[in-house]
Length: 88
Image (cartoon, rainbow, N blue to C red):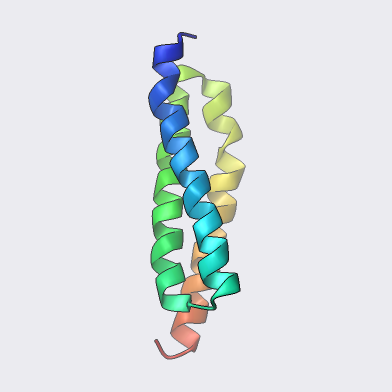
């Protein structure tokens, strides 16, 4: 695999890691459920984009991200439920 082919998938993956860290701080640290919901949606979108972009480089790499994509979707659903139940 050429280094150039990995630049976009690795960049997207890195951005998703940054948003994951931000979401943890916003949701758990600051307890900002509404803002945390927007962060986790962006986090999920970048994670899915990362998995898709890795598929073009290596199917194994893309498929190995799928359990995380499913788990984060569950986390998005849970946070959305928390946001709704808190009358937001």
